[in-house]
Image (tube, rainbow, N blue to C red; front, top):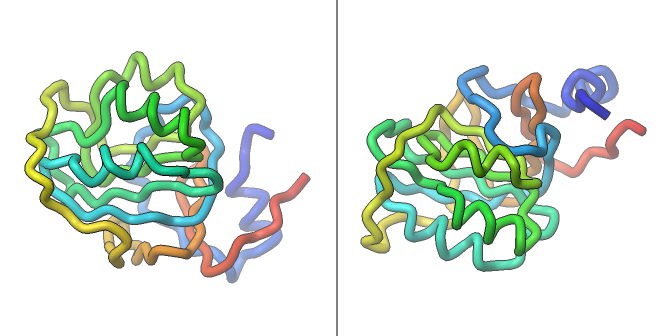
Amino acid sequence: MLDLLPDLYDIYPNALTLAQPIFTDYGRNNIFYGEIVTVSCINDNSKVKALVDTNGTGKVMVVDGKASLTRALLGDMLAEKAVKNGWQGIVINGCIRDAGTISTLKLGVKALGCCPIKTEKLGIGEVNVPITFAGIHFIPGQFVYGDSNGLAISETLLSLPS
């Protein structure tokens, strides 16, 4: 399957909320979906680093980096840990770095752009709190679906088209 969102919208037009088209795809897996786990932080990826070390099976990390373009909240080492621990994808309202390496990893990654500068690790941020960006309210426990057509959320897990 190369496209997920058009098929989901054909089947569940009233169950999905579409995000504004502000993201670029960086991961090798253009199609990804899962239960939302949120992070709220700015220029400090300590919470992202802690989460990629946990079991992410069936989950997508959604990170509100406050649209900061001055530091990267995800790099190759954290992305590799996310793959190792079963995360389906990471969506960042902010930047990544190591885009070349991340493009080879079996992970869905959407972000606003790239920045080669890493963050400081100050332990600042919150996990599993409601966050808002791209015209969407992301709530932990909801579900997110991403592909090359965009990003959408639903209240419940939707059966995928075959």
